[in-house]
Image (cartoon, rainbow, N blue to C red):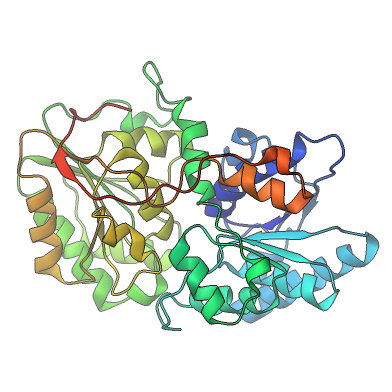
Length: 387
C-alpha cells in the first residue's frame, strides 16, 4: 500500500483495516511523506503500521525529482519482495509513483477511487494527469460511483477490471463519527469553544491552479463574509508556503475569521458536523460533507466529482467573488442550518469491504448494500452541533 498524504491515509485506512484483520494477508505500508504535518495522528487513528518510509523525498527540489526519488525507492523495495498487489488511492504524486513502479515491475496495481475526471489537464493540476496515468496501467479499478466507472469504460478499461464500490471516505467518516459523538473534547483548543449564536463556516483552500489572483478573490470574499456579523469562519490554513503567504497578505485579524493550523482528523470531523456550510477547493471535503447533509461551496472552475453537484450538495462557484459571497449568504440566511436529506452519492460505508472482497476473491466479505443513489431533497435540518 503506497501513500503519502493526509487524504490517502483517510481513504486507505478502512482498506488497510479490512486487509490487516485477515490472518492470511500481510500488508506493508510504504509512506512517502508528502504530508508529514497534515498526517499528525492519522496513522494511529486507523491503526496503520508503516513498514517503509521514504524520508528524503520532500527534500527534492521539484515534482519531477520527488517522483524520481519515489520510483527509485519503490523499485528497490519491489525487487526485494513477491507482492500480490500494489494498492494506491486517488491522484497524488505518491499514487502515481506506486502505480508506475508496480506496472514497470509487473505487479498488479489496484486503484482505489479510480475514474475521476475533469477532462482538463490544468484543473486540477497535476492531479488530473496523475490519475489518468494510473488508470492506463492499473489491473483493478475501484471507481466510487457509476459516473466514474463510465469514464473508465469509455477510456478502454476492461469491464471485468472495473468494480463500483462507493468511496472509502464514507467508511472513514462512519469510523470517526463514532469517536466524535456527544462528549468529545477537541484536541485543538482553538475550536474547543466556538462562539455561541454564530453561523459556523468551515473553509479550506490549497489548489495550485487557484494560486495568484483567483485565490486572492476567494480570500477577499471570505473577508467580506466575516464582516456580516452573523457568521464565524474557521480556516485551517494549509502549510504550503504559497497558501500561507497569500492568506497572510489578504486576511487581517478578525474575531469572526479564525485562522488556525491544520486540524487532526477527529477535530476536523467534529467541526464539519457543526458547520452550516463549507467553502473549499478540496476534493475530499466534497465527498465528506454529504455524509452530514452539509452543502458545499466549491471554489473551483470544474470538479471531478460532478455527483456532489447533481445530488444538490455542491455549488460550483469558481473564484467569482460575488458568487462566493452570494451563495454562502443564501445558504446561511435562515435561523437553522440547512441539511440536505438525501443519501450521500458516494456510497453506504461498505466500500473497503467490497475492495477487500475483490482483491482477495472472497465473496463472504461482500456487502449486500450497494452505493446509494442520489435523490436531492432540500429541507431545514437540525441545529448545528448534531453529529
